[in-house]
Image 1 (cartoon, rainbow, N blue to C red):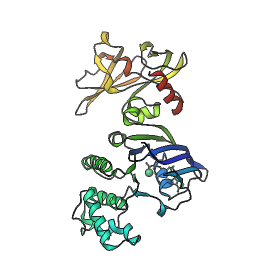
Image 2: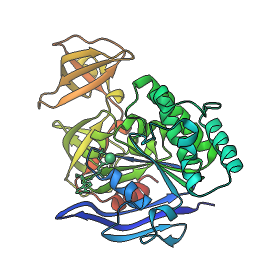
Image 3: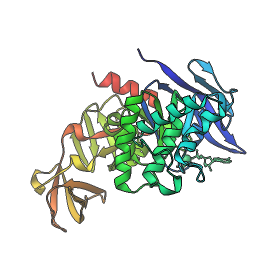
Image 4: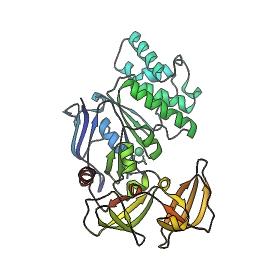
Length: 361
Ligand SMILES: Nc1ncnc2c1ncn2[C@@H]1O[C@H](COP(=O)(O)OP(=O)(O)OP(=O)(O)O)[C@@H](O)[C@H]1O
Ligand SMILES: [Mg+2]
């Protein structure tokens, strides 16, 4: 059965005259991998700090395992945090770093040794006890930081951009390792990143944030396939967004033409935004295209060419294609009705979810 371990209810955080969290509500189920995704300054770290008990919420309620924890001090909460800079003690060796919290708890020595050994085994650093922190690579330090957090057997592990200091290769390896570790331990992870690819690859659920709000929550596939608005469509993945008009259910107009689509549940003649992913567009001859565009530039991206075109209304279109295009050529863009994603202006997540549910039957 699904069990909520954390609930945020209408949480507000205000610093002087600035509200950095504006009425944030969400639920976290036990044992899943959650990601807070959003641009710098949107409030991700603030949510983790409130959860860990390092700062107080100005308004709202925070529940852990059914108990309101607003007034519970940080050291009494069953959460542990892995910080962006790892915050390891540089003058201590691996064992002392990992054992730190257990020593404070005055756990018997034998038990500490056993637990540290086990934690190091889990992060694949067995036998590294006496190694100095200064003699370890970035990825290894990162794993020591995780071992130090999991050794306390928290119910929830908070990870604040733990991979951002690593190079791309190591970062990708660590993504696999973290995901695997989370599944093995069954601990709830709340992971913070501003990297959308990382969020898509690792999470069971993503909360997309902007300016102190959760704009959309859902599985990676939901968020990628059905972004609620321009911000999410733009922030998660590459997208082409143009203005349009919803003529009626399953019929939308943009760039002066009408197209069959699979969206509905909007007002007649409602102004909307249209999103098409670059990988859903195919280049064909001008007479076979649903839209006619002119090729401006292209870049070779390894797996595909990224081709930039414009239409007669001067909208820019990005296409991903395994075939090269000819700069300056007039070509057609082909896409299917289900590739068209229609987005309303200022639709709430509640209305959006309800509309999708009623309309997608
Ligand atoms: N102690 C503080 N006093 C005043 N303002 C603060 C304080 N801490 C954070 N803020 C502000 O709150 C907002 C949210 O900060 P937060 O650290 O949560 O952002 P973030 O999403 O984690 O960003 P980043 O990706 O850059 O880490 C920012 O505008 C920040 O300047
Ligand atoms: Mg932050």
